[in-house]
Length: 333
Image 1 (cartoon, one colour):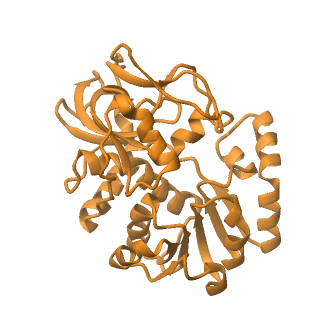
Image 2 (tube, rainbow, N blue to C red):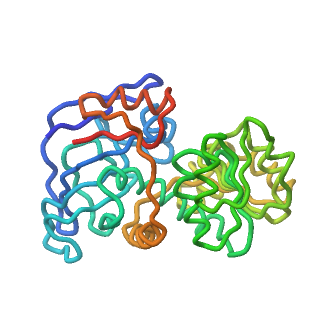
């Protein structure tokens, strides 16, 4: 089968497409024929080696973190899925590999495709939806009736985080591109702040929860809008001591992450709030819960109109890293 592989970590990495064996499955796994694989900014973090301390890979490594496809084989201990089922999933962190014609994955890490999504929109959903779901329920531990602010919520994350947050009973405020305003309003956003014309840190105060999609440059502004006791969750700023403890890292890694996140923790402590960082994991059970919300609310993420084959994987990466995609970028098989 064809697979797009990373041979070495590099600031300017490219992937090499080559023939590799179709993976054999264990008793608790399924073999999936991939239909669509989504390209995410996470690929850049992996390819450059930026997340080696969180997860290092044996190279060459087949890249790709989320996909949709059709079950081709089932292991002897798999009873919830059968050959021909349409599924979607986020690959487990320690065993990525969605940029390939086939993937082997544990049955408890996949879910049937929501009935309102096709293979394209399904592939664009799993990682982002799990990030929002885990971030809201596990890291922020949100409570209905409280207020969530998403800084930079006009991208693919916001398209899934907004309706999920609303389904949990939150008041949702978003900053982002003015082009997304109408779509955000249709999703039920309570307040939308176009970054071109409004500085959210001048408009907001006493926010319960903030989700950061923008990175370290916005950290101080995001802290400024939180109430004492509030929580800030970042997808980009970087891990800290709490992240290392929650993931049961070794003592050495805990020390490294404690040092790396010290300035953020110190600022958060001074403000009287808590800082969290997320690196989303796979979960078939959570995907099934998400699927019910997606079907009930008819949530359909945007997909970029450009189409790429596996041979064009580096062009797809370039569009995600350096261009302005209009929705999730997909590799079609």
